[in-house]
Amino acid sequence: MIPFVSRSGSFEQDVWIKTLSDVMPGEDIVPFATLTQEQKQQCDVAIVANPNPQDLLALPSLKWVHSLWAGVERMMNELSSPPFSIVRLVDPDLASTMSEAVLSWTLFLHRDMPVYAQQQAQQIWSQRPMVRAQDRRIGILGLGALGRVSAQRLANNGFCVAGWSRNAKEIQGIECFHGEDGLTSLLMQSDILVCLLPLTKETTGLLNAQALSLLPVGASLINFARGAVIDEDALLEKLEQEHISHAVLDVFTQEPLPIHHAFWKHESITVLPHISAPTHPISASKIVAENIKIFRLTGTIPPSVDPIRGY
Image (cartoon, rainbow, N blue to C red; front, top):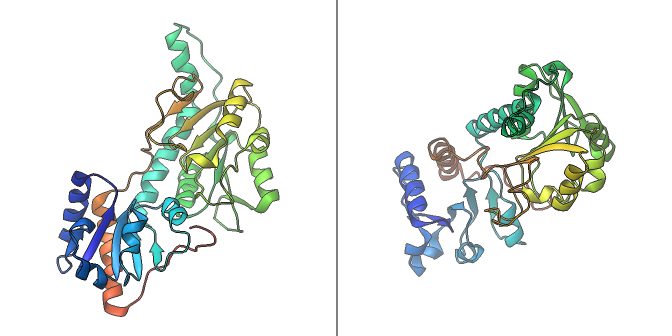
């Protein structure tokens, strides 16, 4: 028996349980709330989507949990020292979906769509000089599974792409930076900065006033990572100073974004409702099923989150 542990509504849980059950006919997947005390003692693996940590701690035999999301920082923060391993979703389809969003919104900024939208509202007919893709410098923060595919997709569409990660990496056709000095170098040469970093202690508030000041005047920003990576007040200040021309934000410190938040009506901010790379139940369920199948056959737990790094 595998408990499905989630704080989502019953309808969403039912969709996931049905999809997971279809690809794992040999497993009995049930909502955590339906478990008896005896059943809770026997569960060695759980499938989770934004779980209540107390529910997980009520499963004393739990060896590992499989998250349906790529990001697990909330679980890591709420479970300071979990007695089980946490496996995040690594889905090639998710990387492709994210790269599609990165390309789409990079093109949105590259071709000055925010400016033309403002001109239409003011009935202004004015053509802006076109910048060639190879002359537009794109910086990617985070070169993990999502960042690597996004960087390559941008490069394949003719952009000049560089990336930054905490540790040194090599990607063909992509200039790679790492470490503190590398971050400075990347920021200073990024006309459009795309943030795909996991949220950790090191990345929280990473894009503060000092970091944002390193961007070229008139640069723009896309955040598809986590809201807390960016200092909101610093971003608003740089937008007001026109040091940053536009920001596309899909993630926020508080979600949904509060209705009175300054971002909603700021003419230089595009607000998206966390839609850049949603997990698709069909592809995600197949990956979870394969990982659990291997565990049942061999006892092998998939690569787990490093509690120190947070990802």
